[in-house]
Length: 427
Ligand code: S3P
Image (cartoon, rainbow, N blue to C red; front, side, top):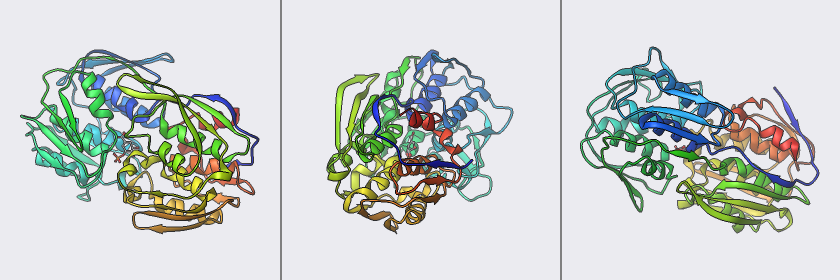
């Protein structure tokens, strides 16, 4: 369905955004492999996480869903059962890649596939290290993508040097490492989000992190625990940028996860001159959280360079950072972000095409984009490319563009943030 977003009055007040997607996925996966009942509050009820629930239900795990909480009735590391049908992971890269690491060690064979976007996303990046561990994992079409046929095997420990900074790759290998015959290590070129390491420790696994290397010892048991999921900084990012850009705005976003491996956007907003403050910083379940206070700052926003080690800490926020850059004075250069080509859509192409439609001065590069901000965007009709983060980024652009922004199909926001438009309207 088409959605039209137009100029708005100041965004004022206090909001909460839904639970963190990465942590919600992991709470189901690790809960399923643990002994006992894992209780999850503030779980993200969005399509991607529902795919994870559905996949584990198909492997015999009882998961009770209510408004208040999710209860995962874990069956232990060896308690999954062979699914009767293909496991369908929808649009979710996290589900697909992380469960592949688990499936590589089960005593059954199964088939894994996803939607049209997942069918194009690279799986070689997990097939390679898992095969090094002894996994039997085959791409049915021999194109390095799903459908994957995974036959569980006895796995060997490896020291893997990953060519990409990817938490999905790291987590897939660490999960396989739970079942291996020694210490499995993954070293990345830059530190990606570390929720797997933090959470697996909470479930009783022996995980250590040393700089860019994470290691895990094989486990005989994981133990259920309670998880209160912090709000997702990737979802908060849309409202951070909205408040920075809509004149007169003052917004408090409560209880957001600010794990340093995720919170790169806060540093970039500060570098650009945006007025953003963290309040009430605390640790909950091993994860840092805070309330984020943002004020209108368009008049003082300046371009910056976004590159290097910070990229994995804001990889999902780059589309909305690009919107911010279009309104800042001067040039913003985003580089070292070639991973954007292989997200839910090619996000470099999508931002380049759509921002050009709105009249921005943007040049796509192999590993990012260069945006010369000129303080305004025209309106126009943009394509979502069926990518939730592209839709939400351009919805924010529509709040301040000279004329309305029409999004060709906004349904995809349900992947990570089903209530996005109602929160926007409430403001
Ligand atoms: C995720 C890791 C990131 C991120 C994705 C969620 C995760 O992907 O883009 O939305 O939960 O591990 P990569 O690890 O492939 O960069």
